[in-house]
Length: 123
Image (tube, rainbow, N blue to C red):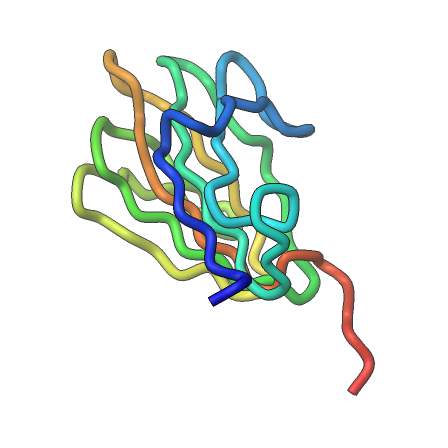
């Protein structure tokens, strides 16, 4: 049990990562920097109204966005989708995507990414 990591969300600081704007904040809950995870990056994000992450694509990473509160506009390869509470999406590698809070209250969602880096790992 030496690698077990137990914490509360309040223990982790909010960060604004590159490519995120206007109060698009995240807490790295399970990540290399918090618990030395090697395969999973699990974050909770809170976007203020009008906050956004710019459109981008990953080479090898897969992601899941799961909305807990609020409303936002997700773009997937140029197509727009409204995401609300309990909606979730799986984004495979190579799909351009961006997310913005289009509502009037904070947009709170989970982001699960694997692997933790977007680089091809040799077999």
